[in-house]
Image (cartoon, rainbow over all chains, first blue to last red; front, side):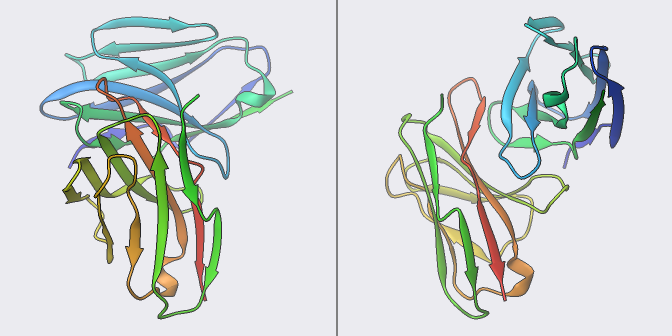
Length: 109
Length: 111
């Protein structure tokens, strides 16, 4: 199996910036994905990293360091609707996905 | 917007019944997946397929079976439902890069 670790829960204030970390151990790494999942709904794709560095997409950015087995998702200008679980997932040669347990983000006014 | 559909969305059924959860996608994706997820818990892969006539079991032991006779269709069948099968079942498909698109899910309750 794969070891993917994320914090269980985080709380942040509306308008602030929050960073959600993900560490992983896997052989044959071929990409890392971040998904957002609101309670009771299906996950939706946020970002994808295959090379080291930062990928920016509006208010969301994702960073990857393959040598360290580390990624983070950065959310800027937090909004109440950003309250959700954020799932880190690792792929091996575009085959099976391995999901972390997810980080539940609570955004408070 | 991804086009992947699951039916039924909600199902309450008695123990011992046979059920089939439907999943269809219109994107022509070769790879399809079934996940099981309990409320607030992580996604567990139970089956996947790389294409027509190709199916594999995932990491979570499951008493369900799948088939892939057509590219767009990936149904999951439980021959004899039990209360332990109560969960949410999510179907997904992926394109070449690997990004997965999820269906809305089926919430199954076995009484």
